[in-house]
Length: 248
Length: 267
Image (tube, rainbow over all chains, first blue to last red; front, top):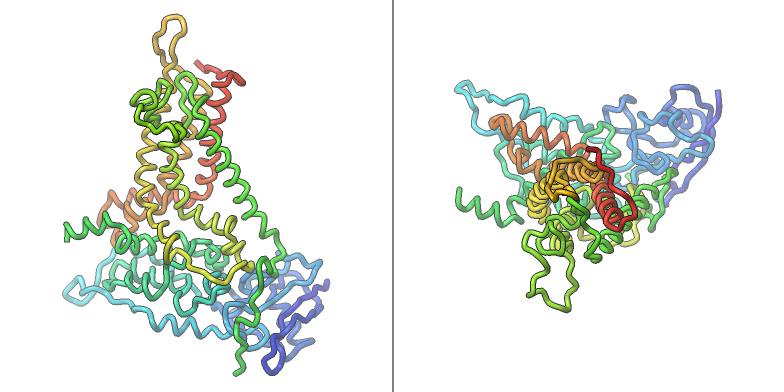
């Protein structure tokens, strides 16, 4: 058994800004950051708040910032970190803090409610069923791997540094929109919303969202840029507008 | 439930809890792109030592007007204003330059490296205001598709220059004969890398098939989409390799032309 120090963000009782507190605890082989936080919780700080559920990287609950990088605590193995100095564990900085490592991510759910839902075309067959090629479904299937950990929202500087929560839906919901807009059966049109209400133009393609995604979804290349290009087709490209006018 | 506003924990410029060398990648981009821009500007204004035998520097291709035998329409036109410096490169470089400037990969890279917007992921920014690509001037980045079409045509011109670079004039007979020099290979590798970069463009990926929800209904588009996608996943790699190969090809032709190095004929 060896020891490691975890510098964990603790919010002040009563709503103060909070501070980092160092906790030194024993660690063993195979531990992840969430294990260490639980150990600190059990042995030294029973009032330490931390949200978690599956401990398998699938529920998206234990999102935090470990050594400054947005990550899932349950997927951050201690042997991948430098333990010779304190490991900082902070809450996601893009969302309002509730307590310690727990943030209020309800803004995301409100955003999702405001987006157009899946609207399938008329059924292809008389029995009310549809036909789609596997090839077409495969393209949007990648987007469905999202576990809604909101790490991409956390790292996106448009939300994190510029607080554009009212004008920009963030990478998670651009991905969600892409999954519907590019779906072979969907018949709704989201391009006007993407341009005007959802602020796709705010994305400046830093690819930070892609880098932090625990599901390794190519958010920027496969979702955001294709949506941006569809918006350009519709609103900014005079040639395609002319062709559309000619061909109807 | 007590909610502390997120603004209470915002940080200033460059502040972060990251312990890795987050500054290394943007610094590398800054140095790499700066070196290229400085060299390309210098080379474009030289107007000499841009051709050697059958070789033509890619900075000067296609040469519309100029002093070399590669010029399509002869020497510098008489109507060219005397006060404006003339170089064949200045006539064509804005097109590939615009293609790279508006490229999705480069945009993300130089926004970080040159404008600190953000300096790196999860690192504090120097300014609070932000317009993004939602309004002027960055909304003009949407012109990337038009530069792409020109860039694709340029790949054809550069490929033709590789073909021309395989025909060497025999000093004794004056007849052109087929051959291969190190310069031919340098130019060919450059075209290969430029082609891999251009044909992996995000806009091309959209045009050939990405715009369709049911791409499977068009096998040609499906195939083209797969091909472009396979290059697109390495777009960053090809962006850098082609940037340095085009600079390297210019350096090679320039040094041969200046007599500093000798071009080896393989056969």
